[in-house]
Image (tube, rainbow, N blue to C red; front, side, top):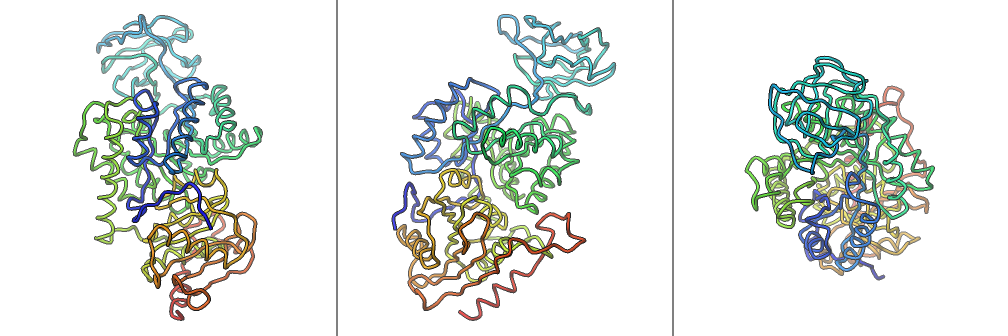
Amino acid sequence: MPFVDTNLNANPIQRRAKIVATLGPASNTEPVFRDLVRAGIDVVRLNFSHGTHEEKLALIQMIRKVSREEHKPLCILGDLQGPKIRTSKLKDHQSVLLKAGQRLTITPREVPGTASLVGTTFKTLAENVEQGSRILLSDGLIELRVHEVIGADVVCEIINGGMLGENKGINLPGIPVRVPSLTEKDSQDLEFALKNGVDAIAVSFVRTAEDVRLVRNRVSAYGGETWIIAKLEKPQAIEHLDSILQAADGIMVARGDLGVEVPPEKVPAIQKHIIRRASEYFKPVITATQMLESMIENPRPTRAEVSDVANAIYDGTDAVMLSGESAVGKYPVETVAMMGRIISEAERHIKEDHLNAPRVSMTRLSIAETICEATAHAADDLDLRGIALFTESGATARQLSKYHPTAPIFALSPIDLTINRLNLLWGTTPVRCPKVNSTEALVDVAESLLEQHGYVRNREVIAIVAGTRTKSGSTNFLRLHVLGEHNQEGVRFFAPHEDEVTPAPDAAHAPPAAKAKRAAKTVKGVAKHR
C-alpha cells in the first residue's frame, strides 16, 4: 500500500521536541527557507503583526511548495497581533534617545515622534493610567512613571532611558487594561488565515478562557476549524490557567511580554508550572522568546542561552520557538541547526539518565486515554521499536504524545490538515496514508510503513493504535504486534465502544491527567500472554 509525501530516514525522530521558526526578511526567500526546512524546522510561524495579506499569501504558497518538494509536512502557525499597545512612527523614522529625568508625553494623536512627544496606537491610554502608574517601553528596557494626565495625553517622567525605535511595545504592569481581546485587525487576519490554509492560530494576550472561546466562535462563524494556541503573556492568564487549558488546543509560554508584566525572576518558575499543568490536560506547549537571541548578530549562542533551551526540554516542553533569530537574524539557518543540536543532546541525557518526568497519576480515564497510557507503558516494558497510530482529528496523537513514550510515534492520517498539525506534537512523525477500514488493513499499513523505511525488522514488536469505528474520536484498539507474524503472534486489546468512562463525582472538574492509574496493569497483563 503506497505512502505519499513521506521522507523518513533510517533512524527517524532522533529529536523529539519540535522547532518553531518565524519567517521574516532574513528567511522569506525560497532558497533560505528550503535550508531552514533541511536544518530541521517543524512549524512555521507567520507573525500577523507585520506585513500584508498579499505577502502572507505568497509565503503560504512558498511553504507548501517547499514542503511538497522536500517531502516534509509543515505546520503553519498564524500568530495574531492581539491588542498589542505600541508606539507610533518617529520623525524621519529615526530612533530617539530618551534620557532619565526628562519628560515624555504619550499621545493618541498622529504626530512625528520625538524625544519629548511620541504617539501610540492605544487611543484610550489616558483612561487606563493615573499619576504614579508605571509604563514600560521596548520590552521593558525603558521605564516611565506617569506624572500627570492631561485630556488624552499622558505626561511621563523618564526613570530609565534608552534608545526608542518605531512601533515598540508599551506595557502597563499591574494594570488590567480595558481592551478587546480580538481586534478588528485580528478578525480580518483570522478570516484570511482560515481561507488560505493556515493550520493553527496563536491568540495573543489571552487573559481568560473567554478570550479563547471568542476566537473559536469567530472561527465557527467563518465556517472554519482550527487548533487554537493561547499565548500566555499576562499575569491574569496565569491566574486562569486551568480554564484556559480546558478551552485551548495548546499553549505558548510567551516569555517576552510575560517577563515585562511580572518580575523576571518569577518567569522560570511560571514556565515550569505552565508546562506541568499543560501536560496534565494533554495540551502541547511551545516555549518562546529570546531563546537564542544573541544569534541575531552572532554565529554562536551564549552559554546561558544554550542552558535556557536545554532546560525547556528538561521541563517537558513540546516545542521551542525562534522569533527574531530566524526572522531578522544574520544566521537563521545556523540558529535552527544549533537549536536542533541542543535539543538532541538534552534528550540524549534525559534518556541515558532516566530523567523523564514521572507519568501523571489518574483515577478515571476515557477509553482513548486508557489506550494511550497503556501504549506508553508498553513502549517501556517491551522496548517497542515504534508506535503506529491511526488518527483523523489528531486528538489521540496529542494525548499519546504527552506521555512522552520511549518509542517514536508515527501518526498516520488521510487528512492533509491533520498531517500538518501533527508536526507540532512532541515525538510525532506525521505520515499521509490511505483510509483503511479493517483491522488487518491497519496492520498491513503499519508494517509497510515501518519496514519500507528500514526502521523495523522481523520479530521486533510495534504497537498499533486505532479505532474500530469510522468516526473521529473513536480510538479503542491497541495491538502489540510482532513484525512478520500475521495472525500468529501479537496481542490485541479492545475497549468497548462507549466514548467516555463516567468520572467520579469528586473528579468532575479535574484535568484528564489528574484522574487514573490502571493502564500499566492492563499492558503488563496482556504482555504476559505473548
